[in-house]
Length: 347
Ligand SMILES: NC(=O)c1ccc[n+]([C@@H]2O[C@H](COP(=O)([O-])OP(=O)(O)OC[C@H]3O[C@@H](n4cnc5c(N)ncnc54)[C@H](O)[C@@H]3O)[C@@H](O)[C@H]2O)c1
Image 1 (tube, rainbow, N blue to C red):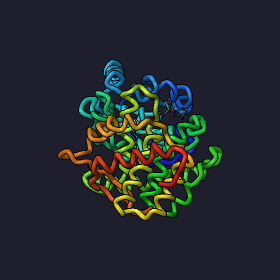
Image 2: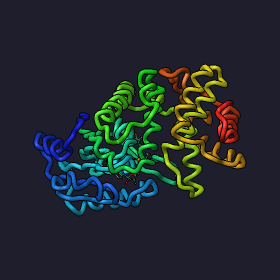
Image 3: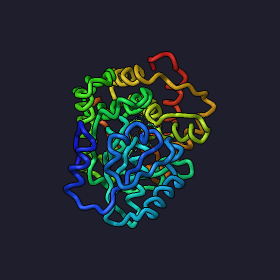
Image 4: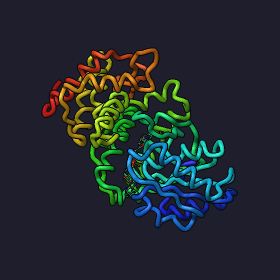
């Protein structure tokens, strides 16, 4: 169930009244504890808080959550409410889905990325051995409560971070949404934000419902992610601070470039995609001595099979095709093109 709300506490309370939980646990990170918890705090029996940041989406934090649940008497009839960005919704849902072989959980995403993507679709997980989301489950939330007003305390760089998934969804969906997302709306325009978030959720849920376990069409949602995750893992392993969305945005441009070179995507549409992305996400800088290293991370992606690299690439704005086999040479060319033309758009 996905509920849009202008009053999160009331929506949550209404939902709890209709259900029978013995205890309600609420998970935050240090930031959402400060910025978002005051709006719903009274409802929880017990608040669990973990340190903020992707580097904490790990077994250590999972252990803190399981321990807090156990020590405070969480039973099979208890509920965990995850209040935060994708880091909190991912690890919280992972812990809930494994604690006592699974207890119910609710997602209340507070970042744009979590509202349009992370909290939707039932993928839970933590990072492990430097690999993103390496341990996890497919488990659906009982309910997802969306209140765009949470975005008003989110730093602008985090709004931009989430925007990469909005652009991705628009490329999957077609020109109607693609034309609407050429600029990022002002944060005071909550009605417009609600419309955009709603559109994005619909695109994702329609795909996920048809293929919950990512056997075929759900792979479309990986657009930008094969190269994007490779970049992100590379940056994490080299202790460089990076953001998921910025890597995905770069991945979208490079994977679209591969599609042009394969003569799947018309050049004009590549230009439109690249312009839309690069207007908001300026090119990253990286020396080509690192390309082999990035390729290793891309090849290690958990979605590859039998040593072949597969990715989802656009054949048009509104038509992303999944499971396209791509050679390392094609990826090298795309990396070279993106990173060596840092200030020019032409390819
Ligand atoms: N499960 C999935 O299908 C899926 C899909 C996409 C991404 N993800 C995961 O999502 C994570 C990234 O999500 P994210 O970008 O939301 O990261 P995040 O949860 O780390 O949030 C980013 C920062 O914003 C802060 N924050 C969140 N909401 C706030 C608010 N309302 N006001 C002030 N600060 C706030 C957080 O504390 C954090 O510092 C990654 O771990 C990624 O793997 C999962």
